[in-house]
Length: 377
Image 1: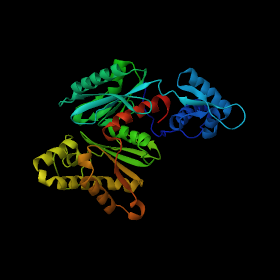
Image 2: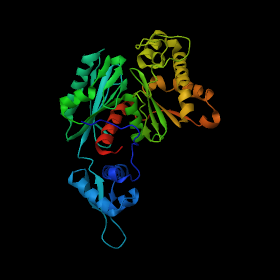
Image 3: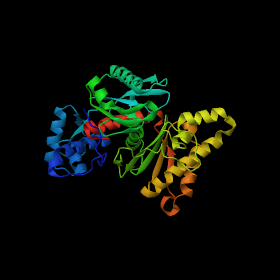
Image 4: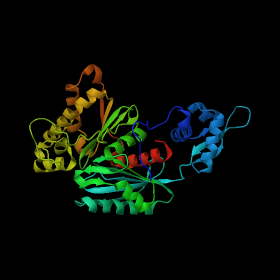
């Protein structure tokens, strides 16, 4: 069973390491080069990675024997001599199951290829399920997706709301009624596949990094059933000492009270920003839609300003319902951020919507599997 990511490890290996760690790292380095660049010769890989040609040849032979790398033919080359043989990651060797538990009305999932493209979809209505009922729904959804896979499955990735530890245990997910739920262990026992479970916002941040051209210093705000954030610093995911980095949804914003949150406090950011809260508020007073969204954006900006100021982030990405987030809410967020941080250091901060839409967590779950199993992203 995969144990997911290790804190402090960059997603994309780029340089050689110490001898005792070298073989596994260099193997990932070769795979990463092929994954991102596509067809390369052995000499191309050696130049790109700084590894010797002998090392590259040995690693390539091993990866071909394992069915992870294939020879795709000879390069058409005007230079004299024997044409170079091109290599690529075998992108038809495996498929990946990605599951998104972040939305308040449904659980959704997909079968994806190694490039993160969605091949088959499935979803189940949540219908207010919590606790063991919610876990049973995850298993049902995974069963449906495993049945749709047409190639060997590299692994199963899950993005869950709440605090998730490095072993894939959901320590706390109030909206789903989970406390200490060993979701990774349960799914591994049921399917006998490598499984990686992580926080949904962290998964979304990984998708934005791999497929959305995000900056290497970035914070992604995931709005759905609750509110969470994923952080990348210098291309490395930040989890925190108790795995709760980015758990901004249960930070109280302001000193003026507010609605009661599912966690028991009043005025948490989630009470201003979570999708069901916003939709209920707008349904109760449609004429005040822009005012409601502006207030939510201001509260988000108040919560983010100290983080942006402390980490000097280059980019904030919003992920969630476009009809709610893009417009008055996003504008109020960036206006509040700029009014509460120093312009000379943070004036060029970018705030934008993700380009990956509702698939972002599922595609991030695929990145988690790729990173855990192959060392690529």
